[in-house]
Length: 269
Ligand code: PLP
Image (cartoon, rainbow, N blue to C red):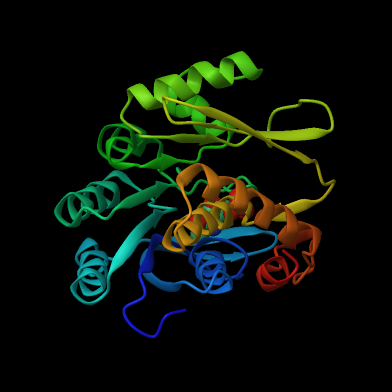
């Protein structure tokens, strides 16, 4: 890391008290990539590896104060968006991004946790489509999130391609459609589209329950952009990072839900 004005990455997302997902995963991913990480906490969850027991959304003015404090002092190259909870939060975040115009906005359209807990109110979907997709340099939905955003089901590669085209039409500059929920043999296929080119990234499916993979992927992409990679190369490197982190992952709680080993993933590259 250069001692003079390194670029920073800002995550605007939710806190996971269990340390596996959300802001906590984001900051670990930034640090493991040697990128200075900033955070504006849009929501707090009381959470462990078994699930979410409560959610608190702080006053909007306090979220705005966190975001403004970050933009007032740091050279923010990338903003990563995670759990935003409701439409009012989405509108405040969109207003701030329109004012500050960072070079990249990575939108992880978090809706429902793997454990089944809702992390975005249903009524906020339209605000996400209208306000955030047009600001996103990359949106990183899993299959159920992409289905909700485009309003059609995705069961195979053709559906995935059509959904990506619709997300580009809705304003996202690029799409990384995560294939973990699709059954395509013993492989997971993540698909990247930017309207000009498309890429497929294939990995062996690991037979484990894990937590925080989506947050980590989007943050690792943000970090790789800060480190100078192109968007497609950042996606490929971040997918490899998540796969390594998952393989090296551990069970910090009493459930069988695995948490990623970020620093192991960074040092075993
Ligand atoms: N909790 C918070 C605060 C999050 O931001 C996220 C992000 O997706 C999750 C939980 C969900 O993590 P997972 O679905 O991997 O359990």
